[in-house]
Length: 78
Image (cartoon, rainbow, N blue to C red; front, side, top):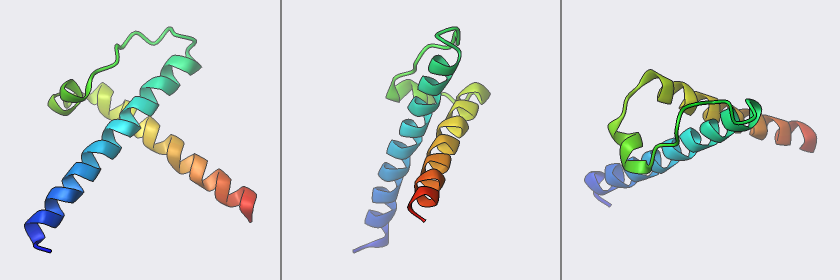
């Protein structure tokens, strides 16, 4: 495979994973705050266009959730 094709595939994967982490973080904030979190959910196009700090923190929360979940599963299977 050419290097350009591999870069293209990894960009698609990275985009999909980052949106998954953002949406998970947003959902966690809504559940934990019992719906009091005032930020509205951005669609995929708005997510990629926005580089706001709040969205980065929401992304980080979703990423940490999956890291903790994988760690918990690994701990329970050990």
